[in-house]
Image (tube, rainbow, N blue to C red):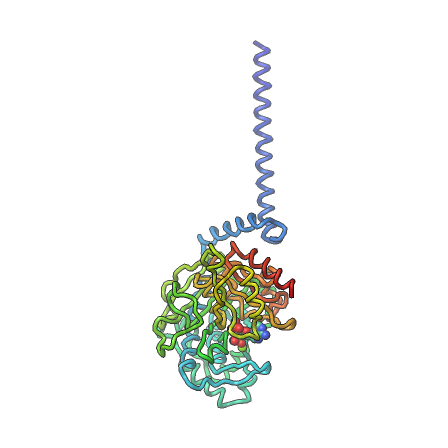
Length: 418
Ligand SMILES: Nc1ncnc2c1ncn2[C@@H]1O[C@H](COP(=O)(O)O)[C@@H](OP(=O)(O)O)[C@H]1O
Ligand SMILES: [Mg+2]
Ligand SMILES: [Mg+2]
Ligand SMILES: [Mg+2]
């Protein structure tokens, strides 16, 4: 009897110590898991991709319940929509008020006007945010007729929706105030705080020749792109329309004009550029590549902006059989994000050129939120935290996440043979 009791007591003791040790083990594992997740977010390269992507999914779920950057997104979309109204007016005019910048690249009254409208909308809503924008007003201060031409456009470009126009802060006071506003885009950029980046007309050369162009706006917080908006007035509204360099010969804008948007962790959308207010956005996603031979790739129209010879060799080695679609501006990012094309290749043409952050911020986020991966030619993520340029990166390779490693491998092989 006593022996049995003793046995039972011993058994109870060992069970409760088991439970005690299991609890300790459980709490310890939990702490390790939390630490792993926390550290993997700070130093992602130390951890396998699976852990990092599981964490991102965790972030997405958390963020979905309390969407962030709602106001930023609304203001950015409306500001891009209004600026695109201005660029479309200039686009349909014969004389586009083109002048040459110091680096010999073109700039038009559309570039200056769109930048003034976007900055004034941002300053009305987020007065302490910094802005990195492409253009500056110096030339306009010495050229009064050019300044006045832009002012005429800026003061008469409004959204039809009165409430939306009010949200953007309404009209700019006068021509001098407009010049000051243009120059508020002179931030040096960097890794701290809230910084917007604007390309009022990306693909100015495309804009001038009647090709694709984009009005681009991105918000970076501590060097990371959180919001991206691309207005592409000459792309088809239809997300399923095939990728083509041709914008058609129609004089009307019917069936054309799209805004791509993304917020980090909330996916990417497209909506018609429209005329009044904002249409409902539709989620967009990159197309999975099942056969490389059926894949399409796009690149710049300008041979001076991207090495088309090297891109051709990469495509061939990947097994891509179709010729590239040459398209100006970040319309390329939008097009692959909605599955109209598959891969975007941008190979440097010179050792010294540094890509500008306004040429890539919005597109980078939109593609990544649509299921893509965007890196430089060495496979490193684009680093928007080092100033006005992507000084730490060379070239751009954007592709569906599932094949991106394969593309980078081929890029390295081809470049290694150079
Ligand atoms: N040598 C070069 N290499 C890469 N990009 C260049 C370049 N010279 C200019 N660019 C950039 O290429 C952008 C156009 O991109 P794409 O060639 O894809 O259409 C230009 O934007 P802007 O048109 O806003 O000036 C400009 O900033
Ligand atoms: Mg330019
Ligand atoms: Mg540009
Ligand atoms: Mg530009």
